[in-house]
Image 1 (cartoon, rainbow, N blue to C red):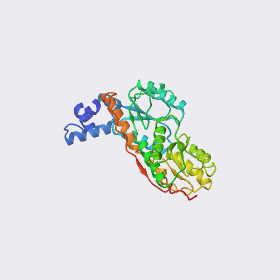
Image 2: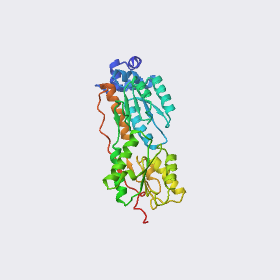
Image 3: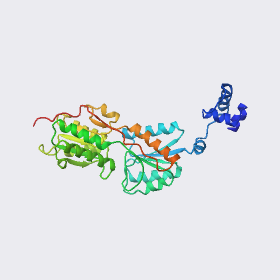
Length: 334
């Protein structure tokens, strides 16, 4: 900045005003500063600037699976919001692997990030999270971890699955199966609880619902649908309630390859409303949660914690919407 000031024949404070768009600077002086910046190929030191402002300069983002469009949209919300403040994001994907999660935690510690936004799904060993907390604030997104006092940014998924289950019951279905997420994961348990509540509110016994646990990937939806739709006809579900869109898409692919008509033979619902959901044939009935906005909210909370301390209040759960499309219909008459 001293070299820019000398080149433009202005004070260092004038250069600072121009670069940060603050203060009163004449148009003639502003043009001289900008020309000097161009002539000298000057680039601001974001780390130094953010340190002075008591803001993060680099943050980490850990997500489960970038093949899933929900996490891609969430990551985009994080990156865009951080970029608005000149903050760099180190992006890590654990790809549903505890080993990768530990490796990414070591990577983020070596990068000396100023905080971490975290959604990995593996919590059997919380050591990685506790180690990351030593670097700076940790914000969970799309999950909560019992036993760890960490702020989280989530959507009201339980209400969403409750309402979509009620929609399917009102179509006339009686035999349900749930392709749930991994056991003991907060999002999985919340969505499963919502499905149970929806059935109970419509007068059905939730314990009669067949439940199988997948891993949120397309392949597990395919394999579990194969098992469920292979049951004797009197036991076979007429509706599959899937804990995310990827598993619902896998279930639909199995049905397509096996000559099982959706929704004539079985209705299928998902959760997330990823872009692919509206491109399928039939288009997928699902619950829409605002992935991009959740990413933005997580960054804003992290920045608040960086400046104000760990007691910043997380936002209320984001609202979700039930999106009715063609993958659900009344069951075929017996």
